[in-house]
Length: 272
Image (tube, rainbow, N blue to C red; front, side, top):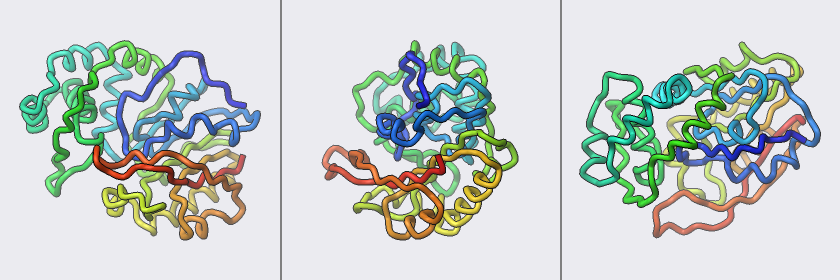
């Protein structure tokens, strides 16, 4: 079994579709395996990375340049990010002020990204046609700054390589016995999961087929992978061939305070 370190490092970002719920099921998947380098091409909140804390190199990538810049700044000089965050306040007026501000300094941009993520509605990342973040204020009372955890996050990123890349570029770096964790935006709705409307333009059905090809190449390279995806018949059709499949329950967390929340299921495909 993969053993996580004893330090309790939490994701510093809220991320729609995050995989913190999967951590308690990892022992069903990993089953005494060992791996070399770690790859995660749909980074998001990186809950699995922070849980595993890989001891070799990690290659963490995403198509969102603002997300990767934020991780890079936390890695390189977390104190600069923290000092800027301490200047922000969790009020509606401050939120819209910060949301409309364009900082030239990358560490201030990283602090802005974290602040908006932590104080926005449901932690959804959404941009308008001009590329401007346009999620409304979330009226959260939870503290948006946890400096001790951010410092731990920075330390855990020391051996990581952070890249703004399309998911297919992961094949350029994978070697035998590496581990690839794949958590794409979900294309199809499962169990009437409503957050699909935010993702259908980000990751199409054609992208799911491209992902299938990437997985076939991961197999060819002798590497391991874990893929999460919607529990939907179309996803089953695409990925079930020559894959081990688990169907696991999780709580539905997408939606506002009045949203209907309950249990839904997700597919996990792996060659472990």
